[in-house]
Length: 84
Image (cartoon, rainbow, N blue to C red; front, side):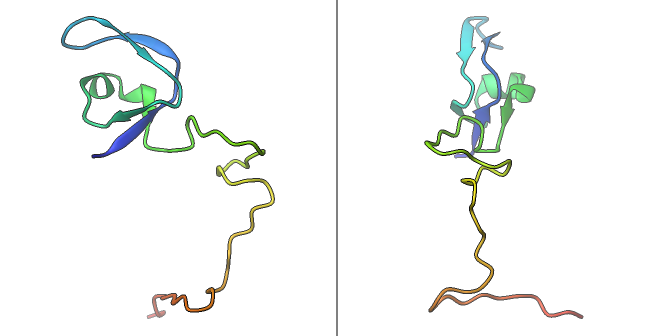
């Protein structure tokens, strides 16, 4: 099942029943839900929406000071495409 995350706090009308549906920022929804399909601008596949952390995060959602590993760890194999 594909999941999307709410980017807003809003109450929307259900497209089929007209009932009020609260949409809470960061909540996750099935991507094929009728509310998601009716209001796609309220949702994103980016999991950083609603992400909680006890430490500050950078713009990419990583903890501040996070350094991406550039080399393979012991026993890890990395592949790369050869230049043509």
